[in-house]
Image 1 (cartoon, rainbow, N blue to C red):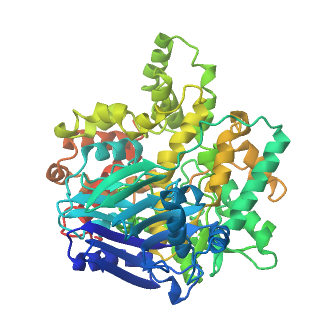
Image 2: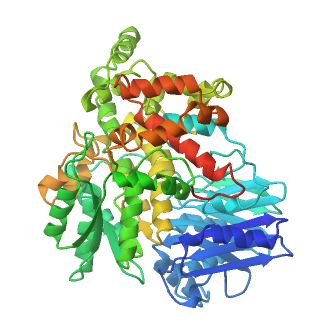
Image 3: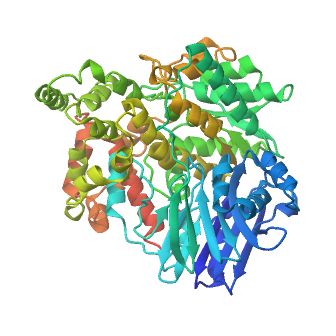
Amino acid sequence: MCGIAGYSGEFDQALLERMNEAIAHRGPDDAGTLALEGCAVGLAHRRLSIIDLSSRGHQPMWDATGSVAIVYNGEIYNYRELRRELVTDGYEFNSDTDTEVLLNLYRRDGKKMLERLNGIFAFALFDAERKTLLLARDGMGVKPLYYAQTPHGFLFASEIKALLQDPGVDRTLDQAAVHHHLIYLWCPAPLTMLEGVHKLEPGCAMTVKDGRVVETWTFYDLPFDEEFVDWPAEDAIVQVRKYLTQAVERQLVADVTVGAFLSGGLDSSAVVALAQRRMGDEKLQCFTIGFPADGENEGMAEDLPYARRVAQHLGVDLHTIEVGPQMVEELPKMIFHLDEPQADPAPINALYISQLAREHGIKVLLSGAGGDDIFTGYRRHHALIREPLWSWLPHTARRGISTVSAGIHPTTDFRRRLSKLLRNADLAQNERITSYFQWISPDVVESVLSEPLRPDFPSTLQNGPVPRALNTLGADVPPINRMLYLEGKFFLADHNLNYVDKVSMASGVEVRVPLLDPDLTKLAARLPVHYKQRGNVGKWVLRKAVEPYLPRNVIYRPKTGFGAPLRSWLRGDLRPIVDELLSEPSIRQRGLFDAAGVAKLLTMDRERQIDATYTLFSMICVELWCRMFVDVPTPRPL
């Protein structure tokens, strides 16, 4: 697990060194650069050594014939099987790395190599004969990859902060990205906050030559277009258990000690249970976070008691870091590392856990991320599955329901969710599905936008990447699978996986996600809907699959989020920061928001007339991000 950067075009080699230094945190074990002046190509790499810790794993790496070079970030979990094939076919190896497997696989299969990979990756591969770069990102988007087209050529990197080492990158703010951050709290690929920078989408690849992109294609998409498997329930349970076990065992492969996140929720507990079974007498080192017992939980069940219960049941070691309101001091650091102004305090939790793991000598952590996104589990899945109870109503009646929702004041957690559920009752199905990802009414977002940003806002909602992706699905794809498609393609990749990668790598820790193994995600997509969401029970088949390994009160515990009491923070410890960043002078100087609209929204939120906490937090994150990434020549933390 590493950091990569590079270029194709007329750039100074000094830029390559600056880009590599900007992502030094991603690879504290080794560093390397390669500048090929005759081809106008540069490659840079920072290494976090996980497999083959020797100097033979140094990158940029050439193959044995000197015809192909690579910089690579990630892990290929089936690299041993691929290596055996390649050795049989006569390919030579100088190391035991999965990196060299990629080089020889490309030599044998060319671009078709991407279809053979089971892993998490972002890489740039230079073909010396064709003088082209091949860039690719894994199918679920676990590893990030950004790129920019400039007057001098093409740049790529694991993080935006590396690209911005070049003053030629356009720093104009992307208005559509601002819209998305306020409505969703994250921004869907390929958009970023800058018009001049894009994210390579999950499961996509491109070839670059002479500083220009010559081809872009998709080699993997979530397989919701395949027929359902007609299995009895017991067979489905056995298959999920089999594929999950296989995924966990694959991802334990490393030449360093592997640990795990353990929140006490179903997903992380399932991963830990299967990992410990595989490890036998060796105790798995697990890590979690706790909050003060007298703090506000804002409707979330407390995780720590469950994590301790699971640890005791499985016999693993649990290391805990307990934090309180002082977490807010980490907000600027969080935003700097994320590269994007994601409005969620959860990355701070992941940052603390990653730091704690590294202090204990752990460089690899298994995570339970992805269970909700492939098997269901979020409240919006439960809400969607219940829609037939009222969606048969005439449109006029549903419009009345939507109107009534505006009068529900979010004074309690239940009222807040009820208002959100009902406000889009009158929309068509696809619009309604996308609306479940919106944190607040579009009318509220529009009221806080500055005049220049308002005209294009409706187009962003109607024609952005999220609704466009949904429209590519066949009409026979059930609503819950349509929502899961968006979960995996955007919410997971652009929100959850982005923050997990960025803050863990900032601590020199690699995070692996067994629940997103390609074989397991394919199986989940083909299971009938009632095996995933069954009434009030999400992830039904996954829960049944792990019943032999975990206590029942853990498997069927209340759903909780991996967050923090943000509402109380914004009205308490963070209030001075809110008042400064959202002050009239600050807003007018930036020009993104309407000062009067923001002041009104802030008052309504504090008086509990509306729940705008995360929208306000998003504006705070956008402003902090601009101060660190736009207002200075090169990105730096505040």
